[in-house]
Length: 346
Image 1 (cartoon, rainbow, N blue to C red):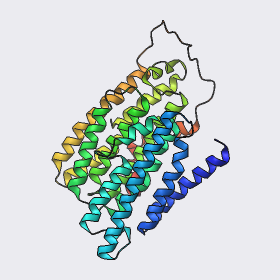
Image 2: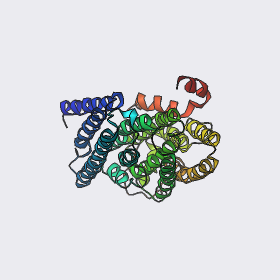
Image 3: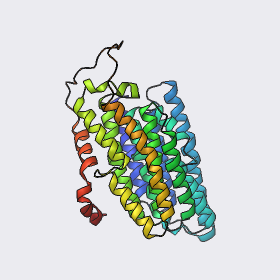
Image 4: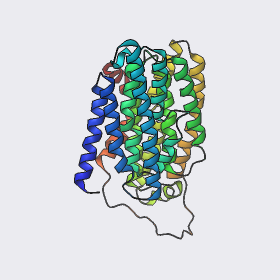
């Protein structure tokens, strides 16, 4: 793909995201979502591999259905109330349809089936965009409409997402699929809190984006698409492998790393809202995610390959590690001590 095409798609993604998150009118928000979908499709299918074409087709069909539901929900609300304002969503049927539409956009259970397959058919950089930037507009719409949405529905989806995201990630050998199920599990944490504290859900999303970007860029720099490849990368970039171990543990939510902060605050808020049972269940379900993060970390840093390998050894990488990886990994590990400043800003 030539640089001009990449520039056009990058600008379109920026435009679509900005349009959705800054609009008050449903039609403008829908337009931004459509621009985003059309801009990411060529990036998914640029390798011309059958799996990439299949991923782009699945992504298009799911996103088109979700966008149609967003439009239908807003039109139903406008028909009954005369309001096209995003924050004035009050009709019960519209609220239910919008919840389903945004769950499809984000990949929340039970509308999650497309996400691991699309991520597996994409490159790591496009996978990073799908896991972070493409989820920002739907999360913003959830944030704006959160007072109108039904907490029991969101809580059910959230607990199912945390359970299935952790459970289905256990047996995977492809790093992209593991990160897809990790994303589904983290979305469960955002969905459970958005009705009670929308700002906390956004903080969770920002920190999740930070840590996921660090993991994706680390895996991209060592070209690790499978666990078996990850086992042999210690000879290529030992320091990056060690940092990757800590970043994965941060993504799992272990203290004293950055990933512990959102989980701690969410459990605290749920307990204040007298839904301690939901807080207990989702905290226990996070142990499933911890297991497959530990498995990834084990493969990356502790496992040694057998000496009778039938492939070329990967020696030290002479290229310096990307500065972005260094900044993101540092932030993924060390933001917990300054949490009072973060909370004051948010």
